[in-house]
Length: 337
Image (cartoon, rainbow, N blue to C red):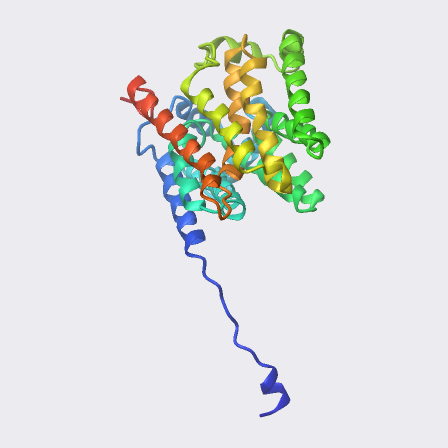
């Protein structure tokens, strides 16, 4: 055998069935959102109206949506010739694929985590709040890139996130705060977040006044948003999320593992937002939704002990509870009926 022939090795292509299944699940769910298979969400008509009004020579600044979303709309409509349902499906697929990629990278049971995500967050995220869904997907991917030491791509992804929805700034700010304290003791971190919640609650009026000056649509958004019911700090969801946080501290001790500890601390902002923005319900709900995906990135990370699965059981229970409440209250994907 010649030396050249001896150096030839067969190319081994590794196939990951779970990754393929996640891709299929993401694409099917995106199509369901784009084509309204489960009914039309309350935001769908607003997105459709803006897409229909868009003209080839329009200034993107003439529209109330962020520039990144509008630029993507312009490219897809005039260069790719997409109908709105196709465009919506594309963005929903991007959002779900990015999130499912993170589940595949960081969890021990990515398919289970993805199914729970679809029950728990998909109805209020990709199916309803498309711009925010895409923005948060890019923002969480940016965080993952930073944790991997790729800070330039992290900054680029966060910039893209902000151009789709400005609330991604809040997620980025929360992540930066965690970077400052994640190597401290759990007691120190708990005190830090407690002080942050108290400070945010005291300064909320000044912050809202500032936002109203920056963006005049803030007042309209606060007054007319459909999530204007005061958040219930003792709701079934919040109690389950608190138990999930507590059980994770006991059984997972995520602060001992670099990435898991980071996402564990990021999840604190979910409940903090409910406390800090209690007087402005729509902010409480929206900001909590920005951080809630972080629970999935540590709760489904198991070790050899059965007790490490308890947080996953709790988040599955939370998803089942939210699904049940949505059905009972008649708000789950039945907006056009």
